[in-house]
Image (cartoon, rainbow, N blue to C red; front, top):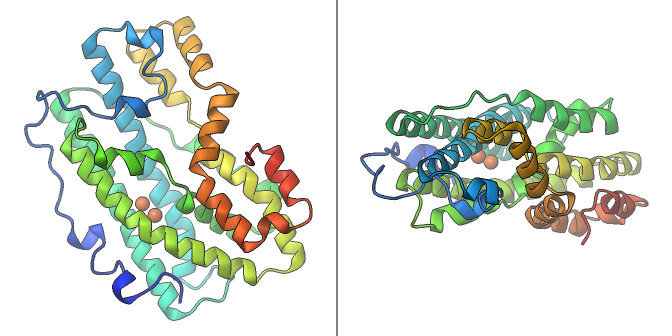
Length: 308
Ligand SMILES: [Fe+2]
Ligand SMILES: [Fe+2]
């Protein structure tokens, strides 16, 4: 069985079964922040620093909205696309009935995370009067799917499973840091804390699932998988720049200033450092399972600048 049971089971303790609906209440105006500034990479740029205080607050709100919008789409359209295959016994890997049940538990968790994320956006936007900038998930999804289409053109289901293994084993600073930050709105901290707790279980499930998947692959398939994974890690973690541009433009910055901020903030080196930090657990999983031992694999990971 993949995913654990007994004390380690999240069945009784998952947010969807235990968490109350989080409400903003009247916390706006008490000085609490929408999002931690140190997790907003362009926050300290001189062009952003010189903006009026109220505009800077709105930038933090839009950064929160973007994070939550991304989560809303990603959970249902990417994680649950693959989780449904595992739960339904259609993933191409032999899994036992208890593993399928655990996959359906994850499916419910992720649907719930989408719901909570959109709920927070609606509440915060209504109370703060900061408008939500329309968000398009399609470019991210297209880029992510293209990695699989190129490396595994005849195995779309396998590519989707690998996308989720990668994403569910990444450790992002957002899930780790926001719950600890007392300067941030309680609704945001509580929602992220509950999400992070569920993701801890998912991390275990998908690490074990990958070990099982890997064990069942032929040598040829392992070779192709090892070529696909570096691209999946990169495309999962490359920052989405369009929403940032849109937010800075709404803040009243001209096209030239926006481009200057983007250039300075998302330099090749800074982006790569962030990708390596967030993927260290995923990389450890691939080391332990022997992915990096496949001939040519470490060259592929090195070419994607994932080895430090
Ligand atoms: Fe989730
Ligand atoms: Fe998850």
